[in-house]
Image (cartoon, rainbow, N blue to C red):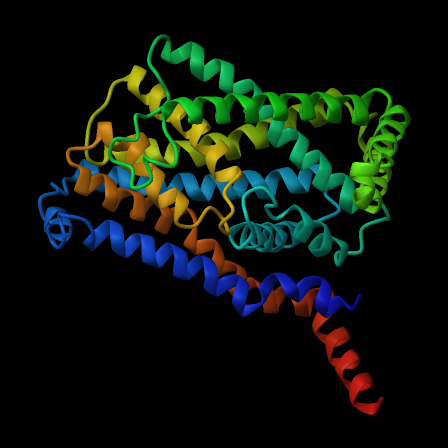
Length: 369
């Protein structure tokens, strides 16, 4: 497969237009649709834009910058500084772009492997870094779920979906089943990754190969074999790293995800002062929301995220109309910038890694052929 088809397939116009249209349609509905109609926009004028509100908005923007810095820092740590700050920035922006235009369950992992392969790291290190990144993300989530449920005590993190536009599709009970089912699956997967990466990689390889040899899973044999080999390679790269390495990597992971989730806390504080207990509830609700967005079939959860926000966070906002508007603002801050930044960074990255020249030569060869 050519470099062009490997990398640029993630930047096809179709991949960009679909999430933008989905997000735009839902955003317009939330702002102008429903029985409230144009009253939604009128309610924006009722917001008291005090100095404090402006500071909370700036804090939300600052948290997004901290989130990106955490990703960049972690990539630099995992590469043992073989990747420069500039390389890490460009990779993270393209990785985030790929995540924004891919369904939640797929994410930008496949694109990350292809993108990092262009950086000419030693064989096996590229995939190893991506696998370890995924592992650290899962560990953070596994740890924060019990902490969040303990912190909120008897308060439910599951909404009633009274105001959700799709209450007939999903309700509190099936969301609870969906969430705990997803959590248990991720917990088992995280344990398996830990076993494969740090304890017995060869046994893990044999387990994977056994499962993909079964009749029902034979069509995944090639992917399974690749994953098994990647796990062994990642283990060889990382299992002997010192404790300080994992401490720094874990800190960068916690910094990234905590900043990411605290953005909504700041946006709510922009409109409503809430206590410490409610701050934990808001944080915990986002952990539940993440499961929904992870299994969303739309690119980057586009459309789904805007719809479920009012159901989860509406109780902390003055009106249903404002909760709809805040869901749009949340996505404007945390989702759409990565589509724009990815398109800006792409040509500079292509030129730096020599991909632009390779594509030019490939096209010349095709014309001569």
